[in-house]
Image (cartoon, rainbow, N blue to C red):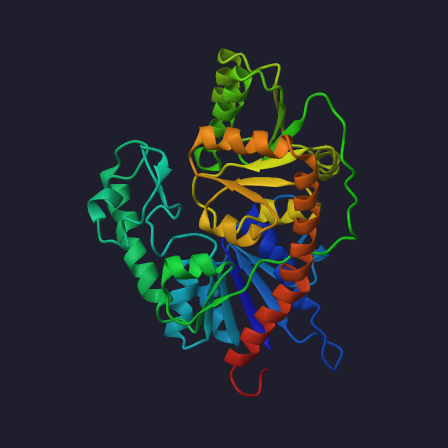
Length: 390
């Protein structure tokens, strides 16, 4: 079967979409069948330039930045088109050329013009203005006024939604997202992780517990909220050490704020770290805090660290609640006081934290295995492929 996988963003860029797409493409390329080749003859198409990345090291063909004519030719020759994200051009071409199109949703582009479900400049989670037809809120949603750009995004949301209502299948990584998007022919396929051997995490005895934030330093990831919680704990004479791993446009301003609030001795901004250093840091962490305000459809950082057996405290966004199940704790999104309370409860009950870590590790093995994700996608493609190609 000739499968075209379109992802606007891909390696060498680093992010959740890129990680999922790479894992899926590698896995599908190795799906066995009788004969010298795999079941899927996969071509990955992306708009990301290669930079220093070596595409020849991958077990599938990568086509970067094709023009419209080349993209049309690639889609015409494929049996099934998979689009990672609601990218208009490949979806439209696939429908026009009468190909089975599968759209995997990594954001909210069919129900929110910005794709984040985040209301700016108020910087609060959006209650769903677009789907409730409160369109004036959508047109005013921006850090600074930009009428033309907001109107364009608003119109494109209608068009993306129209296209996705006519594709052969929509895939979401959580049932919660499926309920939010309300698109026809939707199936839930959770993201998958390569399962490592069980990680033994022994309770540590430290005078100052270590909390870790891991992610991009942007408004929607909620680091400001975590600093506010750290300030509240300081006022209660609760000592913690917060290690911030990651970088982003708000790093400098938040570092200055930490100094202004006299948190500099408790909060360390470590920037981007190699994977090996991150693993060592997380192995000694008492708690991973994921305080996102919006924009999350699954929570890969949560699943990855559940597999490590790390106790996790996350905001109660619908996707996080679904992924964590009963193997983690949540706090009210945007509420720094509730976040501080939940941190105290977990730190004061190390036995409960240890149980959460063990349960989290097992939950990933039970529900979020990479092999399970790849096989679920393969079954969808087989069902949709023209006769004689599956």
